[in-house]
Each structure stands twice: as structure tokens, then as C-alpha cells.
Amino acid sequence: EDGRLYIARRTAFSSLRDLVSHYSKQADGLCVNLRRPCIQIVKPEPEGLSHNTVDKWEIDRQDVKLGRRLGQGQFGDVYEGLWNNSTPVAIKTLKSGSMNPSDFLAEASIMKKLRHPNLIQLFAVCTIKEPIYILTELMKNGSLLDYLQ
Image (cartoon, rainbow, N blue to C red):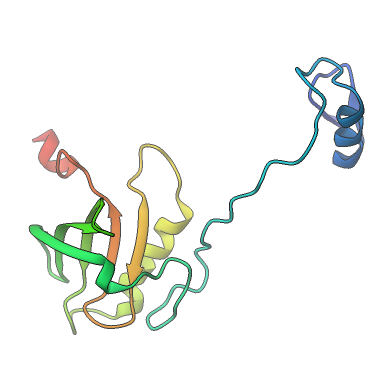
């Protein structure tokens, strides 16, 4: 409300540094004193995803095994598959010449920014050669539309 930071309202601080310093010296209501910061896990960033651009989401096509076709559309097919011989994935492919690869990859760029338990998660992309792949979490019960019908 007044721009001050707190864990418990009775003890507020003007900066994060002051808050951390205080709770490092005394628990003051916490279970224990603050010790070390949590290790930050760096996740791939969505910026820079474009055709022929290698980023942290790019994987080797050899690590992807296509399985049965789940569906097809105007711009490509969707397959069930395995990533690294262990992770079940849905693999969305782009038919060569059916649309601009950067438009296709715009979907993956949006998915990179989304993290929610109720949304399908992007796992990886293969953009170095065609067909381009977008690998996502596999919906074991099929598409939501099919499930609802």
C-alpha cells in the first residue's frame, strides 16, 4: 500500500535488501533465518525463435521419433511421438511450402511464454531443416474438442 515490503505487516522495509538482511539475522516469525538464495533454474527464453535460428528450445531431430498420426490440417500433420526415447509428445509438423515458417513458429513463440497447469506445454522445436516440428505435451485423452463431443 505504501510501497513498503513485508512478510508480516508488523515489520515492513523500504527495500528488498533491507528485508533480506533483517530475516537473515533473525527469524522474526519465520521457521528459520534466511540463509542462501534458492538456486534459480534458467528456463529457455522465447525471444529469438525464428526459422533457422538456434535457441535453447532447439533440439536435434534425431532425438524425435514420430509415431502414429493423430490428425491433419491444411498446413501439416500432428503425430504422437517420443522425445529422447522416453517422453511422450505431440509433434506438430509444417508441410513444406504450405505457409511461411516464421508464421508457424509464431505459435511456438507464444507457447514459450505460457506456463500454466491447464495449458499444453511447449517442450521443444526442430527448425534447422524441414519439416519444422513443434513438440508439445501429449494430451493422453486426445483433443479437447474430441473429448467434449
